[in-house]
Length: 190
Image (cartoon, rainbow, N blue to C red; front, top):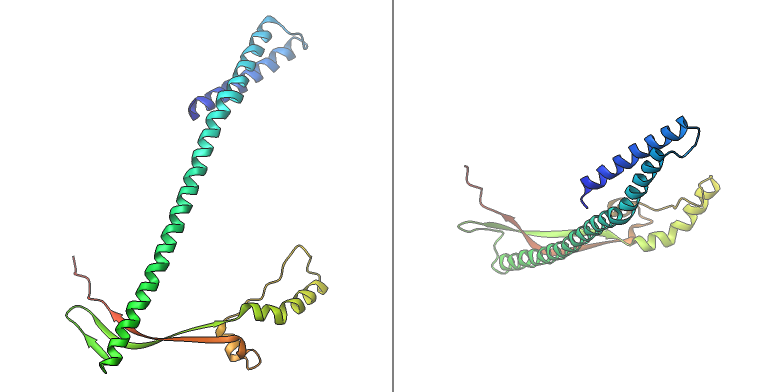
């Protein structure tokens, strides 16, 4: 049973219900042969919809859930591949940086690509230590101020803001890597 068939059966059941109710109202609730025929049609349509119709909709729903799961799985694989490629890119840039430093070159321009030395810095902070230090205190203050228990409190900041605070600078770490800047050739104009 296709979706259009289900829609048609639902419309037919709606109209059969309307006609049945109108006939019953006209006849003061008395079940006439015409009402009995409509009741048979209603029952047949209801059986069709709750049997084959529900199964068809269930198959359609299951296929869409499976399709969604497939896309999620493909996305997870793609995300892992992107992460792997990012690590390889970082490695290659570090190797080029090593070549530049070992050869004493600040910048090198090849036939197609050019590179220059660069020191990459990634600043981060220990969010768990920050939570350990302040989250209970902030949560208690928020509850005392009227924040309901159904709402959680979270601490949000940046490594730069923490580094500027002399009392919290110990939570910040800076990772450096000797790497390079990469200049690609210009794209050809079309």
